[in-house]
Length: 141
Image (cartoon, rainbow, N blue to C red; front, side, top):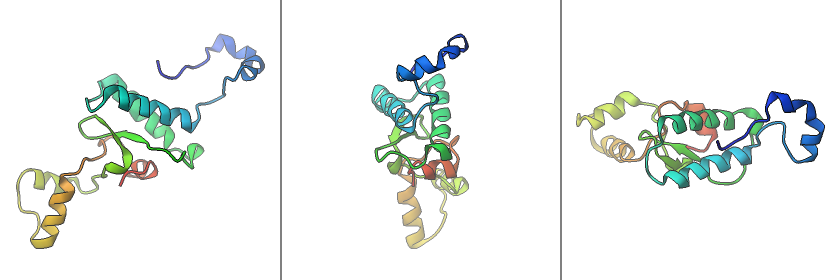
């Protein structure tokens, strides 16, 4: 486990736990550090399903208003291949039908538009389970 929760039977010692430095909830810096740790541990390899589920939950927490503003550090998010990538290097795919047609080799548009779409399609994208608003709050493009 990466983050520990105090069991219910120890909650009665709340004042002692607070004096010992135990927090009531996880802070944004702890959540960012967890994502960073997983990114370094997995390098560019895909996350297993349990780790991906945990990361998606942490990402959702981190994007919540209680964790805003975020610490001024790099935030890692999973891409479409479930690999952890620095958020600002990821694009959110807000036109999946267009991306799918480019991936399939179909001509989507002519001239400059096709060139722009083609270069964007080569960039890594945010995992599809992460909402656009969440990705934007966490600095994805």
